Length: 120
Image 1 (cartoon, rainbow, N blue to C red):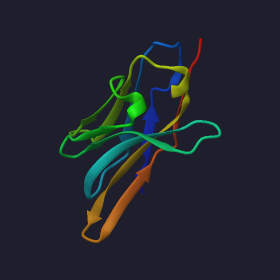
Image 2 (cartoon, rainbow, N blue to C red):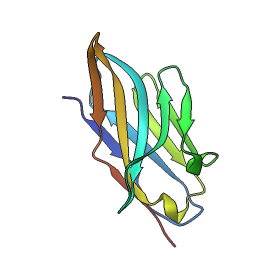
Image 3 (cartoon, rainbow, N blue to C red):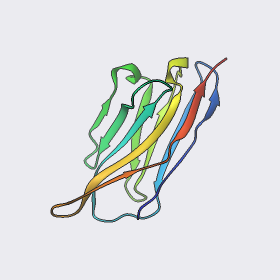
Image 4 (cartoon, rainbow, N blue to C red):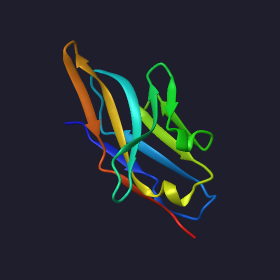
């Protein structure tokens, strides 16, 4: 089974920056999309940013202009650069990888999450 290892979370003051990383233990099949989600206490999980194998990106309105998602194709690693952080960005951030193992067999891997806390 593939594991996704997330890192880069921590405590930062408002206006600061963090860079999250998601590294798979191994890969199989074809990866179609790598996605960052987040979940704050009392809230439902929400999509933050996603990137396809072709490089297309999509962001939640709340993070546009502040967050940037990128992918290292050689390492199959996904990053989330977070700038101008706000207290409302505080949440557990989760990495998600989706694709196809072979025709008719999807893959859907989740990381265990990394805590991001924005507070003065």
